[in-house]
Each structure stands twice: as structure tokens, then as C-alpha cells.
Image 1 (cartoon, rainbow, N blue to C red):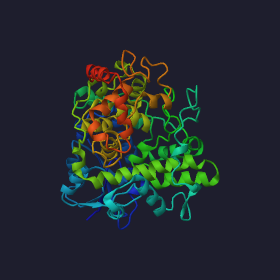
Image 2: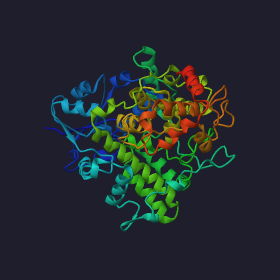
Image 3: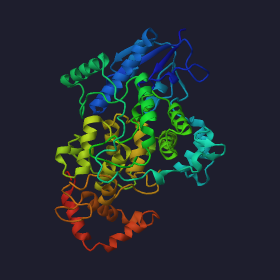
Image 4: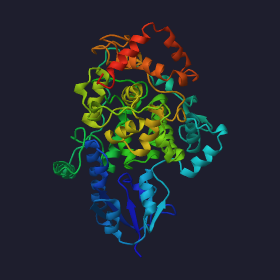
Length: 501
């Protein structure tokens, strides 16, 4: 009987087709399914839907007669149309829902996951050997570096240190509106993109689906060739300047020196090994400093791998965690990506970036979008879903640990040791957002009170009993006792409610 191999829409690179004992048959017929139901279940960012469909259709065009590309209402219907009752292999999907689906289908055999550095069984063995069960990201990162001989000189880390974060947390240059970094790779749209945009327009007009945000022109790679070009341009022209200002924010320069490779990695267009290897080669040639290379490697071999493994390790129950008891619904201005409703310049600027591109880098995600949601007590499951839908690189495995665990502290410290939130002083130090803003970062009460500064103190007060025993938060919590205007601040924040800041 003819062998068939199913490619999901985030399994688009050549490493998902390499045959072998843990891969598809060499001569397997390929199947790809474009399931319309995916877009009915969630109100995705329009640019995200465009990128996913464009990438899938580009890959189908590359594969030609080798692939059967089916457009169906559901995956189940599409697979039945494509292969009937014939046996099918598929690499381990990236979501629990997809894994449940493929395991429920007769004749489907699940192969090990690809697109990551660490096999599941290796992580389970590592996690099982941790004393006290504490899965520290730094320990995991060093283990991955050693196991993959990545940025290593024998048994020692390249450059003499495992962690160069101290060199990679500089604020933006004073008075600079941009970093003047070489421009990132940007693709050119083609007939495939025209077809996708036509289909999305048609689906919206029919009322079948609804999107949020803006679409066009496409900003991120949708093919293996585009992704490789983007990787090479980053490593050759932008990697050297990446590290020092990777946590900085500039209103007129949302990209700074970031790689913009997350969507390509998460679509499977790039393999993480090729990314970190090219970066290490640049350092060994002397083309990029160790702090920039280590910062980039840490994002991929450290944080991305860690989040992927924790998604599966924590189990399905994890998504129901809500340790802080936050229940407030997301307000319409946030759901609709409406920056014009927002006065706070930092939040308005970042909402504009998300609305227009479906992307902003990790610090605006954590310390502006996530921090505001945490301070206002929004439902962490709804916040996680919003990030999943609104970002081009957002997937369930990405956002569940990142948002529910790290950003919203809904797991009570299982993933991180403290809540990640701050007052306006941090935003002012790490960005150019505050000077033209109607609010002042040092002011807690009154018409010009910064919503982040006031929100920070209100958050600490609301959760004082929990946080005063946290070694990393106890000093901040004691600061509440020095606020002579605390009652006024709390009354002000109650009046503000969930109105746009």
C-alpha cells in the first residue's frame, strides 16, 4: 500500500521530510490540508492568517506533484479526501489539540517531533534528574549548550561566560530615534499572496470568518528560500549589533537589530540548529561579538527550547492555572487593537505595531502589553488567547508558557520566580516613549499619573499577602508602607477600571 506523510502548516521545511527510522518513507506521497475551521475557531490577526496560508501554498507549489494539497472544512475531512483509509505518518504536532486529533484517527502513526534541538525523551530524563524538581531555565540552557557542543570551547563556554545578559540590557542611545542598523530582510509578494488575499477577502465578505489587524504587505518569509535569505542577512549584517540593545524600545524603530526569524522557525521553514550554527560561525570568524551571538543563541537554544518542553511537561491542566485569581475580561479597545483609544504613548505605540504587523519584540510583549494586563487583573487564559491570535509567531505551545506562566504569573511561580511587571521608571529608562507622553513616569496620582506606575503599586497592594514572602519581591512590597498617597492611588485606579490608559 502506498505510504502517505501528512505535513501540518508549521512543518514546512526540508527537515520534516528527511527519511529514516524516525521519519517518513523515502517515497511517501505527501499530504497538506488547509482547514477552514482553523480560522473560524479564533479571530486571528489578518497578517497571521495571510502568512500561514501563503507559506503552506508556497510549500505546496515547491513540492509539485509529490503533494496532494486539499482545501477542506476540517482536517478530518481533508485527510479522508486525500488518503481514504490508507495509513499515514505525521511528525508530532505542536499543539495538544492537534496531537489529540491525530491520535484519534485510524491509521495515523505519530513520528517524533522535529524542528527542535532536544527530543522529548531527553528532556524528560533531564527533568527527572533535577533535585527538588526545580526546572531552572539557566540550568537547562547550559545543558543544551553542552549536549549540542554549542558555543563551547571544550568543556568551557565560549567567551568565558555562560551568560552575557549584563552586556545586553543597555537602554537606547540617548537622543537616538533609531539604531541605524541595516534594514532587515523583507520579502516581495507574488501571485500566491494575491490569491491568499483574495480568498481572505472573500471569506470575510461572506461572514464566514473575521479577522483583526491589518494585512499587507507581507513582512515575514513564506518560503524556505525567503527564510534562508532572512537568516543570512541577519547573521551577516545585523547580528553584531543585536546584543547590547535587545531589551531597548524606540518608537520609530520597532525592529531595532532583532532577527525577525521567530515566525520562520515556528512555521518550520528554518531549523534551530542551522540558525545557531551560523551565528556561532560568525563569532568564530570575528564578525560578531560574543555577547550578541550568545544573546541570539540563548533566545533559540535556551528560551525557545525551554518553552517548547515545558508546554508538554506541565500537562493540559497548566492552561487552567490562575494563581492570582484574575478574572477581568479583556476590554474592547485591547481586543480590537485600537491604539487611537489609548493616551499612554508606550502602549499606544506598541498596539499600533501589533495592529499593523502582528509583531513586536519580546520586551514590549512582556513589559508593556503583558504588564498592563497583569496590573489590571485580566483573565490570564484570555490574555494568552489574545497573544496567540494577534502575533504572526503565536502558537499554543509558544504562548501558554510565555504568557500564562511568565507574563501573567498565573502558575504562581512554577516557571518564573517573580511577576514581571514594573512602573513607568523602567519604561522611561529602556525607551523613548515617555518624554512626549501626557503621563509622567514618576507620578502616581493625578491627571498626569503614569498608568504603569500607579498600576504597579495597585498590583503590589492587591497581592501583598502572596508577594511579601517572595525574596525577589519583598523589598518592593515593603515600599507600599512609604506611600503617603496609597489610599488616593487605589481609589484612582478603581475609577480608571479597564478604560484605556
